[in-house]
Image 1 (cartoon, rainbow, N blue to C red):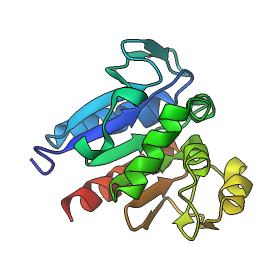
Image 2: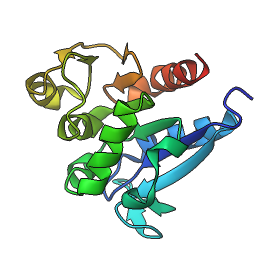
Image 3: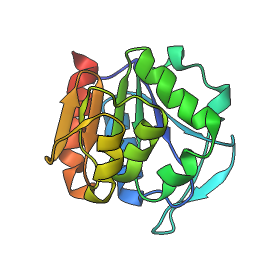
Image 4: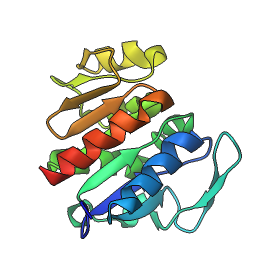
Length: 173
């Protein structure tokens, strides 16, 4: 299995995009990676936009970024809630600063903006937050997946296959 022994964080908050959470969650588990669900509160239940519930395994403030190889941020309206929690934002910032794979899809670009990790990078996101991405210092690229070093971004649920292929490739490299 390609990612056996690797540890990955997937962030969650209320109103997450169900497809953008569950597709990466199970696809990364298929590769042998350990996937940990992290949210503002440990043991809390978060409901996705389609109503599917997930329970967090740890709070962002309890997680040591040095113990993980990658971080995945699903979209939906969850990133707007995630960015209100300083520990969630700091986790993203520290993962990026530590040279870990940081992957964001759709509205998850808001977390990259709040974590101030986009300056000088190429990135994409859902078209409605393009101005936010550009104003944060990134070069906007409209394609299904954009890889800039260890930063991986995609636009929407239809991009999930390319998004996951890029995440897995970046972790193997």
